[in-house]
Image (tube, rainbow, N blue to C red; front, side, top):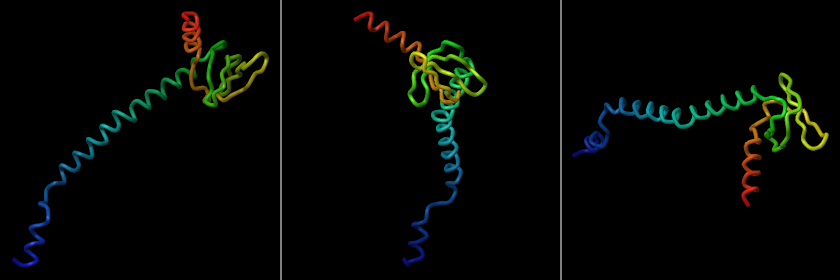
Length: 112
């Protein structure tokens, strides 16, 4: 045997391209199903929450400030933080409602 026949024997057979593309498509489908789709759903829920804010709601900002909604404008929200201290924050910085968290904490405290 000479060197050329050894090289030809070592090369893989052609025709594996279709399997490669199927695997790539499956990889993207799984990535979309487990990563992109849930993130979009979460963003829609957060946007819905921000649009449904009303006066008196207890909220938390992205910076960790807890407060109660005092006034709502198109892009900003005035929140009452402590006593008569009020802060105006961008609506997009509001990340969650903590009234249910506060109620659960009160229930736990009463049980003890």
